[in-house]
Length: 90
Image (tube, rainbow, N blue to C red):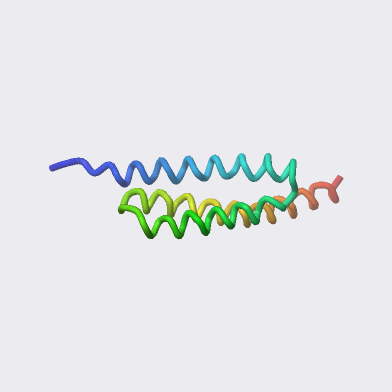
């Protein structure tokens, strides 16, 4: 029996990209507002297209990055709403 490391690797990549995305959304939103969401979505689309042309494991990693960047673009909008609600509450 051989150990399969792909699942573990993909789990680590997923957690890492979520953590990275969380920090990027907060810091970029603070500095640039919601404008970077378009760059997140463009990068997500590019990574998704690239994932079709590489081997299995790398394809999965690129897919995870793609979905994470797409979601981070959406989170930029949500972050804006959270910040507005916070400012209105003060």
